[in-house]
Image 1 (cartoon, rainbow over the protein chains, first blue to last red):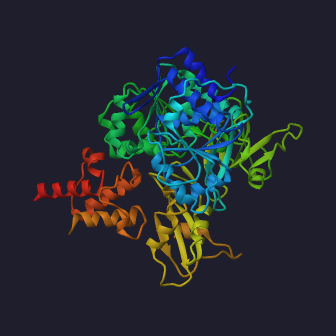
Image 2 (image 1 turned 45 degrees about the horizontal axis):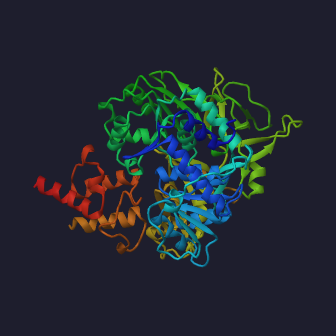
Length: 525
Length: 84
C-alpha cells in the first residue's frame, strides 16, 4: 500500500531499479541506489535515537544529498524541516528552536553557521554531515556523524511500520505577520492527496524529465520530487546558480531535454526578458506549470507563442493547502489583459467563497473570501494554537462534520464558467517573486531597531515581480539613522526576498481619523 | 575611477547591506556563495552599464564573468580596453 511519501520511492525502485532518479550537474543516482542510501540514512537515524515524529532539519543547498536527506528522514518516520540555505542565521535559529529540532542534516560549510546561530548553547544533539568532510571546524558539542559512516553500512534494515499516513511528513516555515515565521504542518495523507492528483492530472510518466527549480522550503518542490518519484520519472535539479543566468537556464532545459517545468512565473519571465528565449526551441517541453504569483498576461502570451506545443496550467494554493485549484490555459484572447483565473478545485478538494455575511457566493462577479476544505488542508501551524484556530476553523456550514476549513485571506470572484479569479488580499500579506510575505514581519523587524520610532511597510505593484516593498521609517532622532544601517539591520533578521527595495525616512506617518496608520495614503503617494 | 573598488562598494552596500567593505573578499564566490541572486544581478548589470557606460550583452551574463569581485572587475576592464 502506498500511504506514506517514502513508499513512492520504494515502489518505483522495484519497478525501475536502474533508471536515473535524480540528476544534478554530472552526478546521477538510480532508483535502486537512492532507495538503498536513503534506507542506510534512515537506519542510522533510528539507531541514533530518532523517533517517530521527530523534527529533523535539512540545511543544505539543493543537491542529490539534500533529496537523500528528506527521503531518509521520512523513512525513519521523522518530519523533515527544510531550512532556506540563504536565510539570515537569526531566522534559522528561531525555526530550529520553534520546531524543537534535535537533529540537523547539513554540509560542513553550512554546519559551521550553527555556532553563530547559537553562541551560548545550541539545542541540537546530533548533526549529520552530508558531504565528504568528517568534522566541523566549529565545536558544537554535539554528536557529529560523517556521511562516510552512513555509506559504509552493510545493512539497511529497519522496521517499516513505524508511522501512519496522518503523521506529519514535513513542516514548511512561511512568513508570519507578528514578526516570526510560522510552520505549516503537512501530513503524508495531505501531501499524497496533492501528489496523486497531480500525477494523474498531468499524466507524469517514467520517460518524463522533470525540472526541479523551487527550493525545498517552497512547496512547489513537492511536485518536483514526489510526483516524479511516483511516476518513476527523472528529476533534474536546477543548479541554484543557473537561475541567476537566464541563458544557462535555457541551455539547462534544452541540454537535459526537460519535458515538465514547474516554477514561479517570474523565473520564466526572467528567461524571456534577459535570456532571448524566443530564438531558442524547446521541442521536448510538453508541460509548463506555474504557481505562486500572478503571471502577467503579456508575458504568458509571449511564452505560449515561443513554446506553442506545451500545455500550460496555473496552479493556486497557499502552503496550507499545497495546490487547491488549477486552470488549464487553452488560449488567450488577443485583447485580454486580465490575469488568467486560478480555476476550479482539484480532486479531493472543495473550494468556495464566502461573502461578508458568511454566505456562499454564487453570483458571477461578486467578491468573497476563498475557503478550502478536504484532504489537501494542513493540520495547522506548529506550536501555535492561536494562529491555527484563527485560520483553520471548524466547518460552520456543516457543523455535524468534524473537519476544518482553511480561510485563505484571498479575495476572489466567480466567472461565468465557474472559475475563480484572484482579486486581492484581506490582510497585509503580499506576494513578491512568488514568495509570500507578511508586511507585518518586515515592520516587526524594523521596530526591532532601537533607532526606529515608527515604521510601516507597503507593497508597490510591479509588473515583473508582482510587488516591490517600500518601507517608511520615522527615526527617534532625525539625523542619526541611515538607510544602509536599516538595511544591515534588516538583513540579519529577514530573508533577502523580504528586503524593502525602497526605504523612505519621514517625520511622521499619515494617520486615519481613528489614529491608525493610513497605508492607503502611503501606497498612493 | 577604480573599477574593482567601485564594484565592490556597490555589492557590499547595495546587495549585502553591509557597512564595512572588508566583509567581502575579492575572491569570495559571489554566485555559489549566494551573495548575488537573479534580481540583484539585473540591478548590478544596470549599475555597471550606467557607471562605466558599457553595454553588457545577454551572452556575457554568465557565471564566469560574475564569479568573484576580481573576475567581474577583470571582465569590465577588458570591455573598457576593447572600447578605447
